[in-house]
Image (cartoon, rainbow, N blue to C red; front, side, top):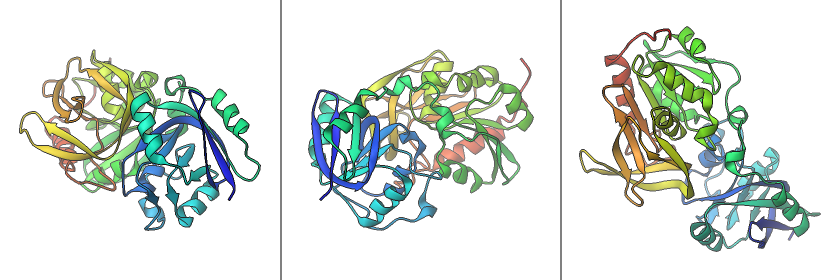
Length: 353
């Protein structure tokens, strides 16, 4: 067995089996998802993170690229109790280091008790614990990745023809299923770079501005915040995950880094109006602490963090979780219907400053 090593903040070095060689560093996080490993591994919100799967066997239904949420594997490295050969080969081809034969129960327990932490990875026939420690020493915190949007966003606008409703989707690390969810409902979608200007958005002449999910600290997405400033009250605005956080900050709210975040497919969310609880897919390490000018309409059952923010007056609708829900559950897909209704009923041409 070729050994591999994980050096973690605090001094511990874990030993596992190398399944894909290489060195890497990033914030060590975990997901509780028991399916959807292809979707998780291609989710841009995992950029600059080392992803640990709490479910023991990853890869038992193969690898199919039609399930991918982006064009490539996004975490810097992958940890698991056991990876199948299919997944190991995929990660090797992608150049993403991977380890298994770890006690991931211990890893997850440590993260739940101590919070997400930096780590360094070294895997392969020549790997040493010192290599992993060197990676750890060079590891930056998530908030230090000030231009992480450039790593995950399109560089030029991408047009998807659909129906008459025009959506401008700001790509801060968008999952592909967000675009497909809008297209399936008869919208046309123009995917725009994360640092797009208000003038660029006006050229699209959208019926709604949509801020996507993405990795890292919402405070580092200043251009997206400026879009909210420019269009709020004149153009309906929606957001998912990081998008909710950016919108809240733009409207007088605040955000903070969570201890270990919400990542998985079993996060319960309660709607405050209907008192209905739905299960949701989530992947975020930051959360809204104060909603500013928005109303909190949904909360996480486990820790009361805001999961939905709205303002009828301003025409704003956001969700912290992922309503597109690939691979599931599908309890919250009606969010996209609400977004299209918002675009249709409040269709207003954006105005110049």
